Image (cartoon, rainbow, N blue to C red; front, side):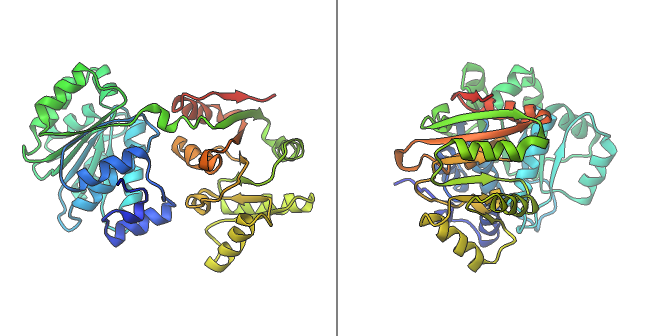
Length: 369
């Protein structure tokens, strides 16, 4: 019987508190399969795309198993690019918000002195690119003698970029009795060579790309001038047969403002964000659940745990900055095998965000004129 929810995992109250704040509720397939073996200290090979929730799959067990009272580097995550190093470090910081871990991204293209000062002050988890990690090792500014957990993330990309020797050099500086996990979109011979050389009886977890394909959801996007966004939203609401929809905004203020503007236009809309008290949130959520409210204008944190049947449309009024959030959002529709529609409004300057989302899914996101 596979665990379905984060609350059913054997996690400490500190880690659980940050997970609840992030609004994580249901486990993604890679999380459901990888978290328990990693918590048990086993080595794991996970085949998973970016966007399947794998950062939480390795980040949460890492935070759970390390000791914040020992001020040396105990966790090491290798990433192929500086962007990923920054992003993953930020995610792990969020999981460890109440567990008092210091997480540092280490990458090239930034003055090394700043990183050296941070390392001197004491860091528990380092997320870095191979080149800059080696630079620190050779200068003696990074010591990996206390590392208990190593994660090789996006392993196929690191190998494609020619980092094999660098990875081997870094692993030679880490204690042999560590836990190692490797995540890769493709598992080929080169990746398996690394696994066979550096891992002990690893558990293999394969998550197909289809897990995030969301085939029952018709996905659309519209590129627009941000000045016309509200009018275009009203057109969408008028033209589509919408019984129940969630409209996502980036901020609390944006959420309240948009709900007010919609109500002034005669739409049945209410806001929902983390600034509400629990009774206020329950009141709005129940009205929406029972069909007494057509449009829920919400932030990500407010809507993460919502499991409401009969949501026909998800409208991304603000495109999410994290591509993974897009899948969390649109997964609120098409529950229980029903069809659903997702429409994303993309400002002229936000095409890159849209491309990140498209890179994560096999499904077609169609352009609306």
